Image (cartoon, rainbow, N blue to C red; front, side, top):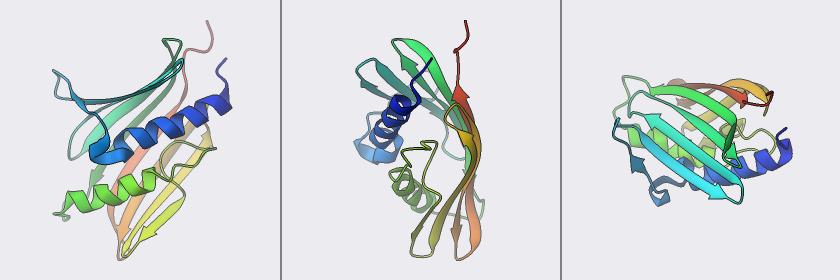
Amino acid sequence: MVNKKQLCEFLVKAKKATYAAGKKAKKIVEDDKSTTLIFKEGNWKYQDNYFGGEPFGGREVVFFKNEPVYFMGYYGLVDDFVADFEMVYKILRKALLLIPKNKPFRGPGKYAEGDLIYINKYTGKIDNFFGEEIITMNGKKIYKAKYMGGFINQRK
């Protein structure tokens, strides 16, 4: 069985070092036109693979001793009327850097910067959860993403 505390600690490090790190993160463009980000530490390996752009969808998998133990799938998009995607993704990356240590799914419950507000609502614990994050600008929703995940491959 996976140690929940160790997994949470690893996920915080991995997520801060990959997509949330922005241009600092090493991205691998795959033959299928998806993008993969990888983080390794000791016996742990994190792999984030996504398609898009706009909209986007992807998955995160954590391996422990080369065995898959955790999975999260996600899908999101910026509203059609928003022309500046980078503005939205910039605040998203900032929010994701504030990932809660005890619920390392996405960002914190709330993060605000100027007229932009990131809100993340979720249910469950690291072994089985789902949630939705939104970004509003002047009170109008401009971004939303849904996610779900938990432990995998625990009973053999």
